[in-house]
Image 1 (tube, rainbow, N blue to C red):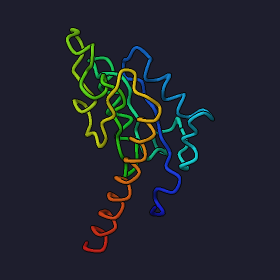
Image 2 (cartoon, one colour; image 1 turned 180 degrees about the vertical axis):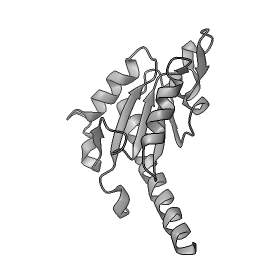
Image 3 (cartoon, rainbow, N blue to C red; image 1 turned 90 degrees about the horizontal axis):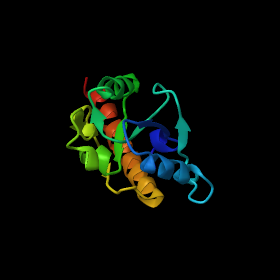
Image 4 (cartoon, one colour; image 1 turned 90 degrees about the vertical axis):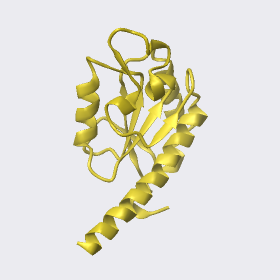
Length: 147
């Protein structure tokens, strides 16, 4: 594990869901699943976050919020779409104001489907995002050397 990913911070945003996936995100943080054993810490500040964990579908009301949170995060950063609604719009995809999954607003690095997504799958997705953070950090370091 590289230096940048020894203790990644995660920010969670519920775009517009039934809250089933949000409950599972909280379960992943609790002692039963203990995502903190990987050094992962939950934060409320996008400027401190390395991983953006999004639940729910993107709609006309929240697309700017999702983009703003993403833009406030420093590089390198990774995005995890948790739950089928965040992946594709899910059961809400035909609603009048739903645009679709998170990838309609920002680039997504890891898709974790499920309805509701299980805590084990969330943890697996975040661990995959940690690997992506390492790759992005290496690419940034190589760019700096080449510049």
